[in-house]
Image (cartoon, rainbow, N blue to C red; front, side, top):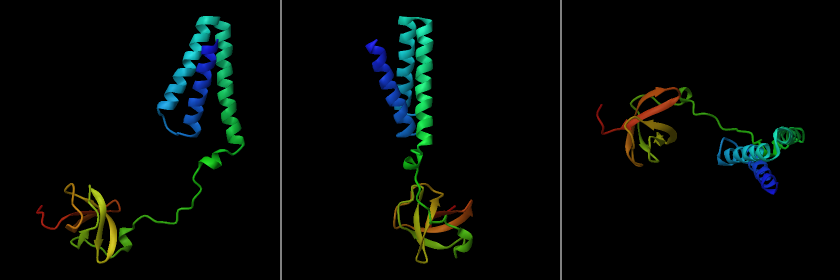
Length: 156
């Protein structure tokens, strides 16, 4: 019986930490579900069908109750990011940049990085793989609000 209690507590802690602390399908959630499943199996095996069904229903009720309690107490507000985002996506149409403009890679383009054209920094994507910082680049095309560049010395 102690083994079942330990598996249940460990399983509940792991599942709840996966739900509220570590979002995603990770190791904690998988181990928690396996632990709870093992506890349910052990109860069915050791104590019979009725005890196993009651135990499984109790585990599900506890999980659902904790989730409902968390939602009603607005604990999600503490977990959510409430910061207002004031930045904007780089809009190429309003910028004074055109195909053939030359600039310099400020960061390594691997393949995305920053390049400076006419004193302004832009996020760019290399068409030719990695480009080291400080390399002269030229604008090749615009597509899906992205600026594609290649090294000036490279020939197509």
